[in-house]
Image (cartoon, rainbow, N blue to C red; front, side, top):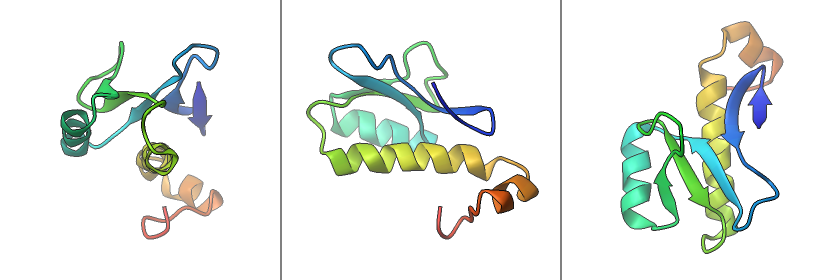
Length: 94
């Protein structure tokens, strides 16, 4: 479980094979990613509208990293302003 300020942005059983990670995603993008990549499915035991489970093998590393960053940004964007400022996060820089 990976958290920022106590809020989960990624879940993964790190010892499993193949490696999978569940990530938060904007609903429209989540559906597009699922349609385009068989390695991406609705979040396992999560709100399937907002979470995808990603089989890391078979996807470009840069794509997986982008999805992790997007998940982090979605969670941080919902935190209080003072917390976002303390984390040096802004919508422009993500």
